[in-house]
Amino acid sequence: MEKKLDFTPLDRAAQALACPCLENEPLAPYTTFKIGGPVDRLLTIETLAQLRGVLAALGQGGLPWLVLGNGSDLLVSDQGVEGAVLRLAGAFKRLRLLPDGKTLQAGAAVGLATACSFARDRGLSGLEFAWGIPGSVGGAAYMNAGAYGGEMRDVAVKVRHCTPAGETGEAVGPALGFAYRKSRYTGTRDVITFVEFALAPGSPEAVSARMEELMARRKEKQPYGMPSAGSVFKRPQNGYAAALIDQCGLKGRRVGGAQVSEKHAGFIVNTGGATCRDVLALIGIIQETVLAQTGTRLECEVKHIGR
Image (tube, rainbow, N blue to C red):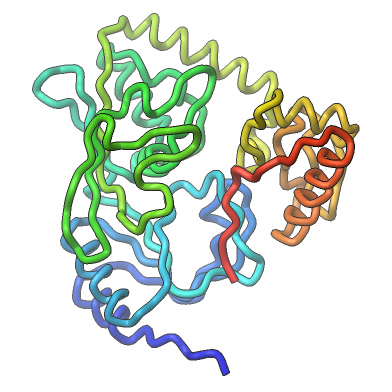
């Protein structure tokens, strides 16, 4: 018989810490795919003290938990998620320029678009590649997000975190362990709280022009504006996933409400009412077909979570 989770310590801590806590909250609205069933508890964390208190209660109750940023690059089970999901807000949405005038400190909950605009308005260049990536600063650092020749590792120089035991720490420079779609934090339980970016002087006009150029390219080639989780597969060693999928005649292929984008074969879009099961079935078809026809095994970049 499955052991019933005890949420008493967490509920008490949330109340004592004044953390908003929702029960059986559907996660679909919190993801860019607009797919996902309910989580037992969804907590909003606004301060480091609240984060420490909630992590302690989660540990006391032995509850499974995860941090949810902007919900991009994520596929949530139709049956939902067991345990707790934490969403950072408040102090973790703070943006500020450090005294040197070129280092931007961003809270993990800051949207990448907000960070890009903040840098542009202050005549700082380096984050243009991230304009249009629908993620948060914390999520981007966690997986070394990148686009159009740029990556987090090009600009992120320091990351602060909180361990499950409530201890704060930081990683700097090479210790960040950036590699293709991963970092020193990938697969750990440390919660990223703040990221510092080393940027370069640039005229707001030039930075804005570059951002607009990249956005135009994104809208031209990608299903921008349709619910998706971005690129579904990691880049294989031989070529590009989208080209291989297109080559196999899978562009436009559907399972239920999920469809291989007709605009960019590397994306699966939610055409309306798509379920997690639809998406997983379509991913399976793509992987099997591409492997059979090209010999290439596509590895998922999108993270599947839940029951």
